[in-house]
Image (tube, rainbow, N blue to C red; front, side, top):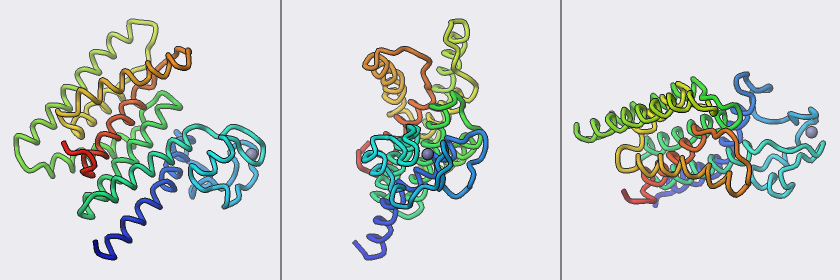
Length: 247
Ligand SMILES: [Zn+2]
């Protein structure tokens, strides 16, 4: 391994959690922009400045057991999730080659993190997240070598979008309305990204995981399906595209 490659890999792994924290800041303040734009330097609850030492991703959160050092308020769960997702994106990107693929993996990981966190907090799929994911899905189609492979991606996307649209119509009749047009578009784009081999496990896990969480917590409520779809698809994608898991 050359020195330059090693340096790039170390950089991606280190910068991942910080970028994830940055993405979480945007997701938490959605639909407004965070103030200030460059990260989380003041407590969102009491306004006290946050010391640099307590801005270490994940570690700070773990050491303080999810509490703010200034006022004892609870830190939104979006931050540690964003930081962990950023770390996973950095590790997966670092494991891949060449640089263009590394950049693509990192971008997809962060886009899915943003969409997942906004949906978790607001039950809404952010439009700009879909735009970014659409571009990334387009690149995936363009980079697929065979016509057959490209068609498989598009067909998987269409099938997942159709499945979600059907589910959405059923859900609207019931008491639990929570699926929107954004979820349908998200499912379609995720289908293009994961393609047919991973489509069924993605949807299956994304549907079962929230049920499992609700059973463990013994608390039923609306499910942010977009959050689970993004997280599960993201983990599969990161594993496959970085060759950590051979398809
Ligand atoms: Zn505070």
